[in-house]
Image (cartoon, rainbow, N blue to C red; front, side, top):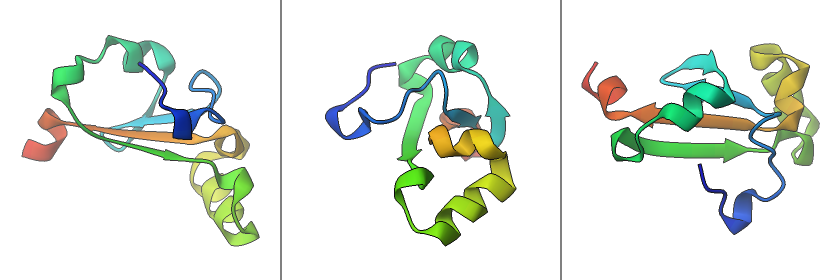
Length: 79
């Protein structure tokens, strides 16, 4: 996966990776065919307001403060 300039503060190996709504890992992310990806969202809760940090921690645990990468694929869009 290539990082763009806006995402330079998110280390994808430390971030919470969510693929099609399920927490996953960097190995699974790396195996995705780029042609199958419909959207990618990157969040850095530690840079946001306290409420954003708390919501991220509640949903994904303290690791969420390292960043959250949300990926949706064509397969997920069909469901």
